[in-house]
Image (cartoon, rainbow, N blue to C red; front, side, top):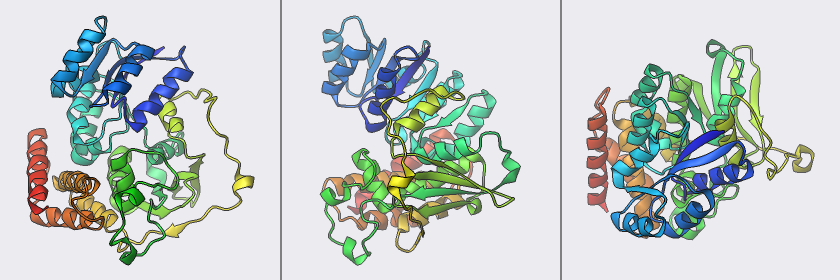
Length: 380
């Protein structure tokens, strides 16, 4: 049985991870978890899964839950999430938190030798050089949970890195894939949150609409698979059936297909290198689907994807700025403070305002992250 520490248990990936634990009680056990502010859902999870350690964001919630569940250990804040990440009885850390808050706990868990199932894009985007170096030094496996990176990972089983010609990440196009830029001027938050294929959290859904989500995935792929950006392409694929592909030197392309269900890549990360049944999963019926569609990605239409490529190639602290500016801008859009297209405007201004620092330390990354958020806030 694998004991799991789950960061972000009440989020979209966290809930689907719990689905897998629930379906396979003989295979997995929830040993520790972190949650943000969704205390009502946290109560239900504690009752059902009985984790030994629970980290919450605020002290007031810590105090409340501690009184309600005297047989559970509780902790809180930044130190609390690290405690959950490195919990000694857990075998594998599933990092499903949103944002750069996931970086330090991941680094700490790597130093403790934990296997990492990584669903937190920002960890690799902001500090990929630190994370991958720590993983190599500690002989730790980083297993991708994003459907695109899991697809590439699965397609590379039994293959050699030297034979890779390029990676092809597929993108659904998000909520506004069929709209022109002029039609995006007055779109609402509600429209942006209506993703055609996937059920995700608000921030990731907005990132999918701007295509920043795919940009972050490109940077992730660069670090996970050790390939230059020139060998990482993005292809618009509306059905989200082919989750990504690998092209090899001999012109062969290997793709991983399946219905849009995040539990498949989550479960594969938890069971790798084995596979186990997913009883509640939906089988792919290609005859019923009939056709799959593909289009080249227009970087002038999806400017955030262009920014991500540029920030990735520049390296150093530029991806940190990209991520921090985007998180701040998306939050402002969700709060009704800016229009949809202003997200990319704010990201562009933050990137133009920053002078890249090469090979940044963790403290430098954290300082640049803080400064970028303050700068974008000053523009609102």
